[in-house]
Length: 604
Image (cartoon, rainbow, N blue to C red):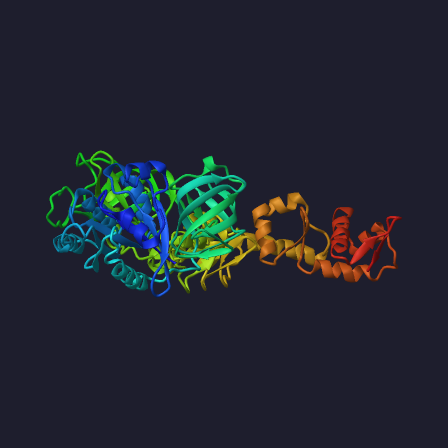
């Protein structure tokens, strides 16, 4: 299926033409038919000569219903622009073309209606001249009469050619269905409709309703009036939602693949010049400078139209071609999305926009706005994983993809984060210098705590610190060390430990008392450093022996008859109960001995 929107001045025969092409009534409301004017969006479809189906979104042409028109053309890739032969180019023709130009619509077809009432050549040539100045460029034209049927065969053939030129949709993409209608059907519940531009919907799918983030389930699908188990893009689709009250859904809401889009209130955008801004004459126009602030200073409040949504936006110009928008409510936007701004006061379209960033940095410092504008000028709005990572330094993989940016290949990553290699090199150098300085200032500590290293390098997750280690650093026991460091003990500590080792050489299990350790200047840090250096063996708190004393103890105890008492063990080790008890506890923890119910011990 292909979807095409109509556009053109009020009462130029858009609905009549759709009716003649499809045999269907696009106007849905009795009020529309009574007044002979489309007020809201209408829908109809037909099969083209070579087989494809084209669905029409029929939009209102009256000035008062421009927001409804924008909701109709927002998600649609192509347009059937209608101009009446007997009236020619009119004000709403220009306004509709402004909108199409702002949205960057590049595929279209001109239909000159009422060709039975007046020679259509003049109206055709005038309209083509206007259209050529817009993003539509030079498009085919067909002169028709919805009343007599003249030219309809040619129009069908031209529509066939138009849809054949449309880019193929990505049916595997994430779903973002902008809702243009929501209603209730007795026995079914809430139903929404929209144009599915990408992805595929299936019955049973769980989707996210935005704004709000509510999870909903697809109870049923219809496309072109027929039920379906799945509907691929591009398509007009009706979605029956399970367990969702009608009041929870409205035009401008969106059904999304869960956790695949970022909802944003703040975004940086590129402004594209308005087409024919301020020119209501019949002469062709040219692009005029962007206009976003009526007062010329400060922020302007406008309406952002994207998809079927219309949301108030405070526009802060950064420079002539860029601005920061702050939205009244969050929208699921991605880098590269096209939208437009409409001034509610003048009812004009000052600019089209292209989304450049949906997670922009705060502009708090003096000069930050100018620096940001310069940065934005270098962005081409084509989602680029490497370029985006370079700008951000580091970003969560899921968040980058949700921005609409393809995941860059071959970049450093850990714990779900992607890191720019240049940032990694810079922070690795910072960490290496900091760890070396920490080792010099704290010779008794076993390296820098991992959390300190994380904070110092500004990493959001401690697991990212491992990406900074390189060949110079390593992590052990939650601390960052200099790799292969041969740091010894400070001389004073080394001398004190040497004295202890001499005393233990005479009586290996006569652990020095606390007063002796203090006398030698061996506090908790010094003793811990000596243990880490392998110069002492810690048996228990306050009990330090020479390395290998545990093995020597086991050899001596094996000479005793089994089982043996603690007193016998103490005598065999030539030590006190203060030392014998923790030695037996150590051997038991290691599974080398066990205590019997009667209190005696035996080796295993």
